[in-house]
Length: 340
Ligand code: SF4
Image (tube, rainbow, N blue to C red; front, side):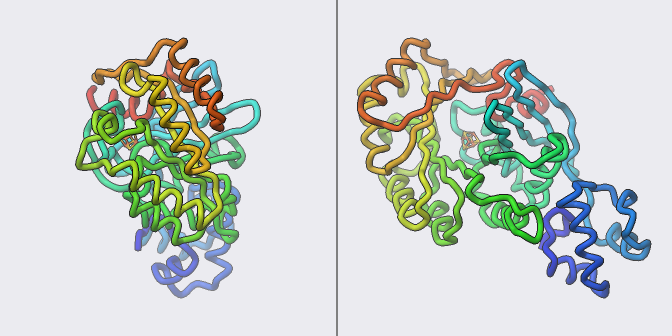
């Protein structure tokens, strides 16, 4: 059991700090999850003895904002410093229709995709449930309200920090705490078949996004190291099980990279995979990362890839990466900080 205040449930709190009437715990949770006040000294109805024992037995540290950057397209990116000096990132994407939080699940990433800044230094450690919930709460406090959507597309592979992510989502989605809808949460994975099946078994209503980026295993191996990559066939089978079990629509994330995965024949294969999965495709032109060899295809190539998918009847959105002028490609703020 974690002792981060942000990750404790009622019963865990009663075990860790026993002997207080239930309404005391309820008052504390009300301050944190409803009022989003995290400073014990500002929780006016918390008694002195309860406050002292909380200070002694729980970790009150939450991610602290180290850096905040805004763009003209209303994206705000945060670099958070954790209690042990590690850094993670989270983003608020503010479109006309909705406000979306993009959150991290790990410090670094074990997958080490060759095009991504987050994986550059491998995995340092998993985030504690409290550090995941903490990002959600701090961004909500910044926004002065809850978001419309949450996506786990920040630093890390969420399905490789499965238990901590689920513990955090239990707090975020449970009526007793934040009461945020499961249907507004998207878990984005590089494609871990066992993790997808485990998630399906839970039978929750989370959306699943698969970062496929290729339509054949040879091309995928150029982007994702062998030891972290699973055959596309296995990923597709596990995703079909997820759809069957939960009924939730799957999204295929496909980053368009010049002369790697941007040909029209690859568009045709992608449309075939999407059809099999009844999935929506999100096309994202690559956002250049310092120190990585890949580049973004010209706009005309991106548009003809998109058009081909459309012509083949695929459900496709063409997402121009927001925030490219603030190092918004996942993990770049952290990479800059580490290399300072
Ligand atoms: S793209 Fe995602 S899975 Fe790949 S290294 Fe980056 S954070 Fe990890």
